[in-house]
Image 1: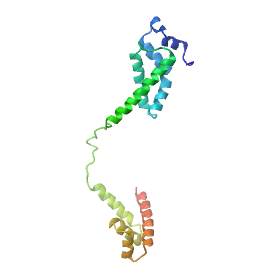
Image 2: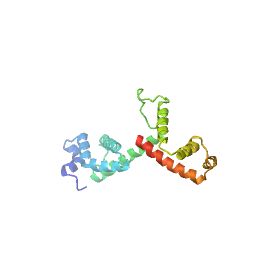
Image 3: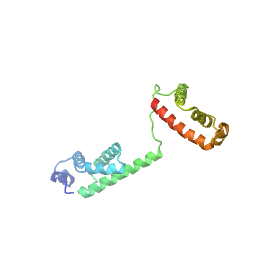
Image 4: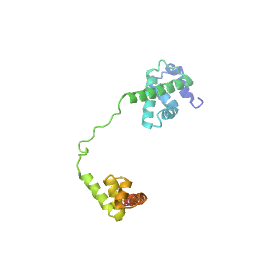
Length: 185
């Protein structure tokens, strides 16, 4: 605890009341002397959630202020007490998050999507347009397997080609479709 200034040690020591200092002075001294290391500790405990860590530090210091009469004012004991309180606050926070469902905001009435067929129709048009970049053989392989839900062997038999040829057409067709759709945004 060599980093604490002489005045902080005086505030943290039994001289607090003898020199006319208040509990607010104690809270200020605690924040000044322990705020930074306590924040680093809280960040580790919260998985680097800065907002949660700030809340933990604030709640810890409020509890120290509320319990000023009972605190052992030696820096080592204060640090241990503060870290223990911070750890318990984080544990309680995790428990309460598990016990309650996460809160979500009500969606804005103006932003609620109304189901309609326009998106689906537009997507179908984009896909249909992209299908035109394929060769006739690739387009037929896509139509038979994906749109008519037929197996590669069934399509091969219908088209009179080996199953490997259907697989090859599908592979190249899907790659060409991806490129075409990506180009269309």
